[in-house]
Image (cartoon, rainbow, N blue to C red; front, side):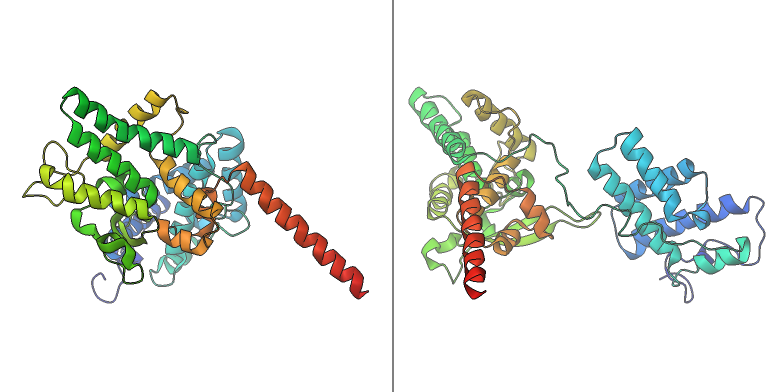
Length: 373
């Protein structure tokens, strides 16, 4: 909240009422941007880099259209989108980010709470409108926006990869080389990333205290649930937390073995990191990526595979095993079920089974209809 009864970002906080500015349009537009910046940082507590990125997008639309916000229309916005997609070949995710930024800016300046509509009407005889509608913007992830070659790993690839990670421990022990503890740590880390469907950053920053008992699954002991504290944040927000239920007995056993037999030899008094680096703190997401790439290349696996493929595989394999899609969505922390669907690339056999079930259902329905005629 600003001074008096004005909301953070209000026109009255950035423009003096009744004062005629020399370059009124430039002055009002600059004040709008400053008000939006203040509202997003002060009232909404968004990250600075997110706020600045949004301001840059709005400025680009202003420059591309040659018009100020109170002259923008959906048709003008459509022309800009057409240029971005057809001429500049911007990625779908980039276009959607532009749409979100402009839509949120228009929502801000059109809100009666902030007084920008009244300010524009008094100064220019017109007012801003929302130019982003459901008809000219991309719905959330209706089509896959990631790299076309990104894919999950097959079950055979997962098994080869995890077996190879375990073999690295045996090789170092047999040769007397250093690094056996680190190799054991990394092998356990990859098992957790796959078995709980974690991103590289999520798994890298786990603490020893993040595992806890699940009263509904006592068979997993102290490893029935996993608290993910560093989940992917919404745009500009803080990291999201979620609790992930343990589903695999082999994974719970692997973590138990690591925590009881290896972690005590590596842990530091100053850190509760589950995966302890040589400096006694958490291993970095970059370490996870480097070690994954090393093992992947040693095995001759597809170079497109990254640690995120373990998360994709988690979703795909649970889907193939018939797990409820809503439960999978909650496990991986997706706000939209459509996002979870994009992670799924089921095997040919499973796809054929679904196809046969669908065909059988349609034939049975047609038979019942024919009998009832």
